[in-house]
Length: 301
Image 1 (tube, one colour):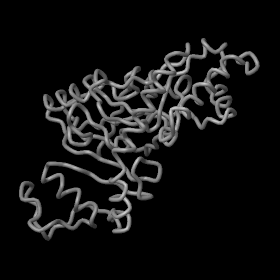
Image 2 (image 1 turned 45 degrees about the horizontal axis):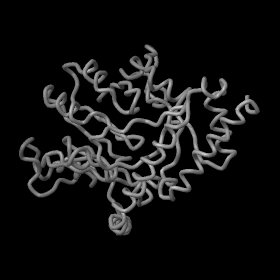
Image 3 (image 1 turned 90 degrees about the horizontal axis):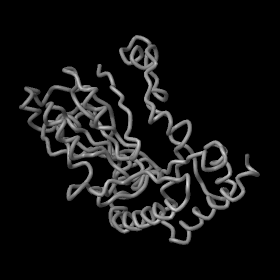
């Protein structure tokens, strides 16, 4: 029965805009769900403060945040819960699935029950008066043992891969800043460990002879660099039933989220995370491909 309340992103990080969060909070708000994206993060210090002031749960979407560290706290441990994805394209993968982490016993018991066909652990949830024999709304989200084994092996190489990807991300940031019309997504210095999923930079068509972002992407692909544009903004991508409050809010009212829309339709270019397990020479190839396009931009226009 919850209604998602969508807010725009920060123009520098493409992560949740905390000013917009504060403006969106009402007496009906129950939780805030920030996303770690593009190897960057929202201002987690400020967001945690906002949530605590308003008595809201902070649920970290860490689907793209394996190995991230904000100050000295790992992503997923800052708020009340952290949700990680193990889908086939993520940093750690078991083909599908994920994990929820929390230090809150009630949240842990509830998540366990929802995952395990509604079954409660011994003792129920005393804090909410839920007895052991009761069954919650449930699904079967149980992970198989072979998936767990595959993930345990990947933990052994996680930090090595985080370091390689982060080093290449920082290097590509530096190289791209040398090109007029290309601006990497900003990474807050308080995010001390990170890796790009995916990497993202902003493209300014005015610096490339007026050639559109989509034509630029096609040219970059022609140079052998895998790339694309972002997923659509949530208010465009999600399907809302006509009877829902969300349908009225996002379909009938047609709200605008200018930063997200500009990123999707005009300026954002993404590079897949697997490129960042390569060498600095591989990163140089990306830069040289962009420079070549810039030199021959009249041929594309």
